[in-house]
Length: 256
Length: 256
DNA sequence: CCGACTTTGTGCACACGTTCACAAGCGGTA
DNA sequence: TACCGCTTGTGAACGTGTGCACAAAGTCGG
Image (cartoon, rainbow over all chains, first blue to last red; front, top):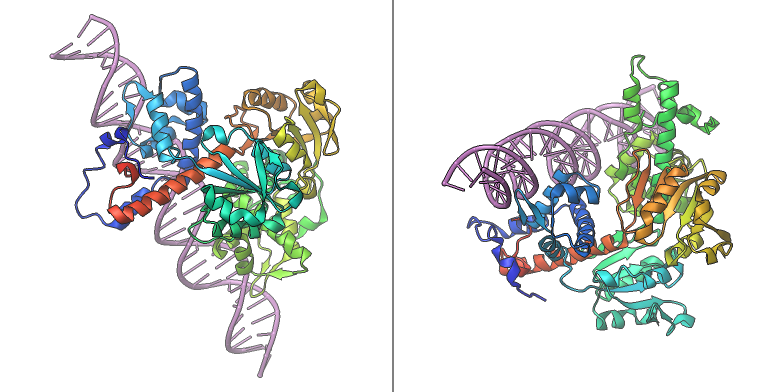
C-alpha cells in the first residue's frame, strides 16, 4: 500500500537529480544500502526503542554506537544511508531516528508470519513475544501431523500443511518460517513459494533452492556452534604458537 | 588438550617454512581464514556428511558448490584455506575432505554446551538433536526458577543458575548458550565468563559486553525478520521505480 | 553578533572478500 | 612415453565494506 506521508517530504536531496538519470541508476541506488548496514540498523532500532522508554530524547552517535557495540564512524555512515536527520553539535532526535529507520526497514507495514513445523522450535517461535510486539504478527501455524490440526499453540490454531496455499493467501502472509525437520524443508519451501510468500526464514539445516524473486535467510544452529568451535581451536593454536613459535596444535599451520 | 594425531602428519607444506618467519607472521596466517569462509565450511561439511551417507566417495568442486549454493570458484578458494586435498582432473575424496574440515573447525574435540534459560526456546534447544549428533553434547541446563531445579529436560536435569560457575568448570563447558529474557542476559553472560566459558551463543535481543578474549555470536530473530521486511520494502520500491521512473514509495529514494 | 566548542556527514584510503581466468597437475589412452 | 581432456589451486583484478580524519554546520555563552 503506497501511503504518502507528510513527514517524508522534506528530504529535499531527492528532488535535485540530474535530468539524465537512467532507471538502472535509480534502481542501483535503491539497493545501495549494504546488507550488513541493514542488519545493524535493526540493532540500532532496538537500542533506540529502549531509549524512548527511558525517556531519552536526544542521543549522540558516540553514545548510540557504544550501546550498539559498533564504532561511531560506522554508525554515522549507516545512518547516512537512511538520510541526514541529525543535528550537528547536538546529536539525533531519538524519535525522529526511530521513525526513519522503521520506514527504511519497511516496518510501517505489518508483515504477517506463518510458522511451518510445530515441533519444539515451532512451539517456541509461536510463543515468542518478540515477533508480534515488533510488527510481525503470527498469522498462521502449519504442521503435517493431523493430530495437531485445530490445537491452539500460542493462541493460534494449527492448520494442516495441505491448506497452506489458501490460508497464506487469505491471511496475507508475507514471511514464512520453516521449522521442520530437514527432509521436509525443501517441499515446505516450494509450497510457501507457490503460495506467494516471497521471504523465508529457514531454521532447517539444508540449503534451500528458490527462485530469484524469493529472499531466504537461514539460521543454522549447528553452523553457529561450529563457528564458535573454530574460534576455540584458533585460540588454542595461537596459544600453542606463542609457545612453540611456528607450529600449531596437531603440527598444522592453518594456511600453508 | 594438545593431542598429536597421526592423520595430520602428511601435511608436508607445514614443514617447508622459510627460517626467518616471525611469530607475528604465523599468527597472522593462523587467523587468515575469513569468517565468512568458516561459515561456509560448516555448510560444506554438512553437505559432505550427507554425501558420505549416500555412498559418494568423490566429488568435484562444481557438484559440491551446487549442493551448497555457492559458485565453484568460491568453494575452491574456501577449500584452499583448509589445504590442498583435491586431485586435479578428478575432484575431492569426500571422506578426506570431511576429516580435514572437521580438523580445521576444531571438531576433533568435543565441545560441551550449557544452555541458560529453560523457557520455550531453552526447551527447544535442550531437545534439539542437531547439537549432540554434531559433536556438541549438552552438558548442563540452568534456570533461575527454583521450581525447575532437578526437573529433567531432554534427559538432563536443570540446575539453578547460582551453581553455574562450579558446574561449568566440573563439566568442562566450552560453549554457553543464552536463551533468557533480555533483562537477564548480561548478568548471565558475566557469570558464564567468570566460569571460564570463552564462547557464547546469544539468543537474547541485547548487545552483550564481554572481554576481548570471549567470542560472542548472536542469533536475533527480530533482526532477521526486519532484514526480510527491508527486502519486501525494497522490492516494492523497485516495482514502483519501474512505474514512476525515479521516485520510490513515499517519494523517497533510499540513498539520496 | 561573534567566537569557541561540539557533533554530524562524508571523501578518501585501506582492507577484506569475491570473482575471473588460467597455469599446473593428474588420470586415462594409445 | 607422449598426448589429451579435465579439474584443481591460485594470482590478480575487482567490488564492497570499514575506519580515519576533517570540513561543514549547528549550539551556546558572552
